[in-house]
Length: 495
Image (cartoon, rainbow, N blue to C red; front, side, top):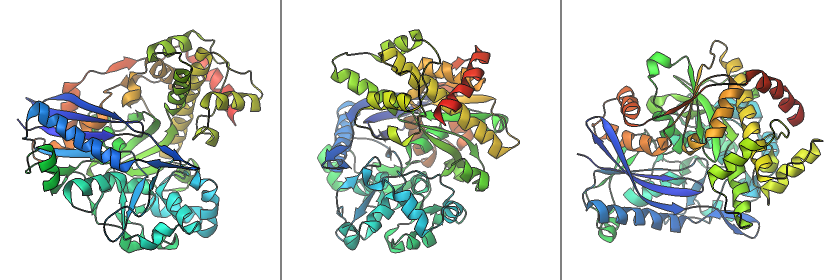
């Protein structure tokens, strides 16, 4: 049986998971986990890329300890939008900023003065956010960053790690599409936009499809870790959400006009799978985005603030030595009074505040609401507001798509374990919610490797494996009238 190794590296942690397909059933074995997060230096925030690469090698070492040297392939996925600039020696031209770095503050407006908003959207089909690669790169041009003078190569984060592992410099399709520097109509880099932003088109590498075999692992890494030098490095859908959506356990043809999804984690990515990009005035008005999916499908979605809000609150509660488990937070939220406080999770103030709890309180005060104080009140404020924000996004989505109504919502990723949020979402949207699997990103990563090596034939078989291998949990809406009434209050309090 073939063995596949998936590196799933998120903004807060990384996991290393072994996958084996046995008689159509995928078995997973998580063998290593490591923390991740931005490093604050003065006013800037960076990724510690060298430590992350060492953690990748540590994960390979753990595989060798448990399974021996033979391994068929390795696939790696990460978050989107962030990038590495290399000099002529293929070394980073400077430290690697995180998307939460404040260098993009106010840059969207300055970018629109140089290039009209409509022109950018028509070329890329990507929603406007300060975290976008395009905005980050424009901020570097605007501020005359010296790194640009010595840049020779642009690589997104997973492409950089793939280069270190395989020696091949290229850009994987799904990750490239998150940059707002890719044109989904020409299916290549948006070279006209790139040059108008003050960037050089020769920095950008050839774009490779998901499932491309890049080649064998670098000899020095094989020697250092003891892994077989024949181990192949495969580019799956290197954007974590791309891998996750590929692994949604749905019968695609049967349910194509009925389902939407939320890939739930630090961010909540809410959308549908379309056969081709959808770029029009309504999509731009509602700030929807077209990212690349498996088989050149379009992940037509909205990037919403997700569990980042509650994660940051928990981090502060932990600092106060409250030592709350997630189920205790959920229990307290369930016991708190309903529909008392409302926030807009996507407000810029919640992107990277010094203190998330204080920011939530300040928001409520600004909008003439009472102030949530207890753990339960703050947590319920977040969960209810996220659910109403999902409802707003779904209504906008249905307006864009015109003939489509969302009848089923799949929630995948780590957030699919959050029972209270799942139930609130079913209530707010008045549709059944199917939650799980939680490991869809790693599952999609592994199964695209299997697709590349011929163990799986197509996307339908891939999703059938997922459906046969993992259990899901269903949530049905209740108390609909109260949720509908308070959605109007949410809109009033957060507009």
